[in-house]
Length: 337
Image (cartoon, rainbow, N blue to C red; front, side, top):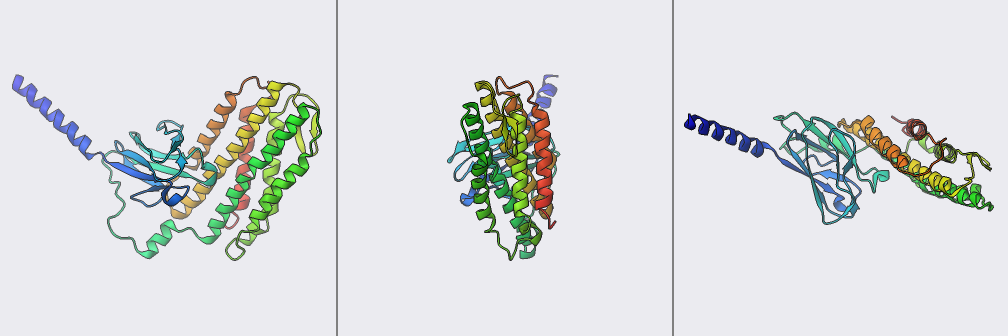
């Protein structure tokens, strides 16, 4: 009987060792060649394919970044780290799991881990890809690259516009004058200068003709967000801005933090849209809804941590309004698709 028990234990031990031996670790470079990208060393792009039980190891190559996903069932967060650094995560649940760099998500620094059932083959190919295959799977067409660039520049407009709103709120609280329209005009002029550099030879005409309208969409989106953040009764901001000047310090601090988080939500949702458009062209798996859902969850959680906000603030309603506005923006910007 003891011999049989010992033999059974030996078999179990061998099976455990075999399972461990079959699990693999795949490496993703973080910031390779001083770029704001994740690059899987096997696939050559931002998508990493593993089997359940495998581990992904992110290796920082340059800069300061994070690898972050906050949605279940697979969640992880390296927090912001500087080179040299590495971070590992074992994946147990099959599915598609998009993740971001929290520092550079507005520049499209996102990636995806695809987890297949245990035992599935995750090796792409040992053959050297032909030039045609490489072009089809990794090289984006000029029109799409232009649309991506335009979306990044539109997302980048959020920060300067929100700064104008914050300055207007502070001045309004102190009952001091402030020319917010002039402040926003400077921010839009900066965007216009950058947008004029989009190459006419390769950019879709429908996009080039809509640059000013797209810019104004971002401004209107953030004007509405400011109105939702500064919702308490008071002296109206005036002009094309909704909302009222805060009557007390807590409302001022809350409103400024909420508008900043709204701008961050715009940037994160735009990054998801860019990744979705690029993945669709490459025919690579990407869960756009999960990416957007993670960004929306971060927004609601961040706003929920702000203390002493007015009762009229509805973070869920604001989140939905921002998402709907970004959806319209993306539909108009990706006009050649």
